[in-house]
Length: 354
View 1 (cartoon, rainbow, N blue to C red):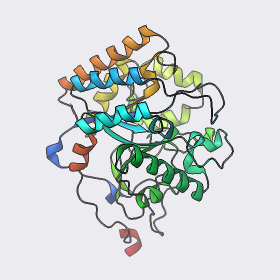
View 2: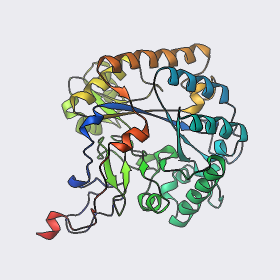
View 3: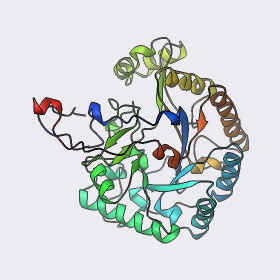
């Protein structure tokens, strides 16, 4: 990833680090809160090559149970939802009910290999929609938004790219399509070896993005924990490709990278990550998981009923810790209400004006 040049305007590209005045200062009344995104998508074999067929939308009972559970826990999830799920009459009707009664919010999620128009070759490289030709990314986004409006009676304003696959044109296309918030940046992760985006230098705080800076970027939350966490980004980057060294640092309690997700992350590490983020002054802890995890057998994280009960046990302990730390749940509507009005960041930076 190339840092923005001080001699040229920053176009708000989501693959570039924001300028200092792009960072968002939330209304102090918001305090420190957490959000929950559910990547709501079809079930498919995660170990098989990508395919336009061979998927299902069957985890609805698991989604309904989770929605009841989170509602009773005082959490209002945001279901970022992809084309096959929206195109399922049963699934879209279920979620439309949650939207209507105000117990959940719904956004858009784009898996290009199952999202029309089907014009590109299906491959690992083409699974990142932001790296497809601009016209193809625009057309797929338009098809998703149109189908979303047909199902829910409104246009989506919140977005997460499938596989976190934003690209150089994504922020501009999202602005043009009327989105107000993106949550595709997975800070401290680098997918470039898998043909995807590199986020390792991008921040965990919310910031303005897009050419007109009308798009809020709310990154997924990741923390470095351990005795060496002060050097976390640099040290983790240096050892990332050295599996035995990185694993040894983690086992020794020296350094580990911990995303806020129940998928493959233990409760103890998650609690350490929460505390690290709070120590660093982060005011929005952004959790996420995939909807197929809500029923056994669809993802590597929940293989059987015991795993599913462990999933809910994880959430119970994490929510208890958040409550002890005074961190309450926030809906995306509540978060956006705490965001100040966008300002024009297309002007020259101080370096340019000098």
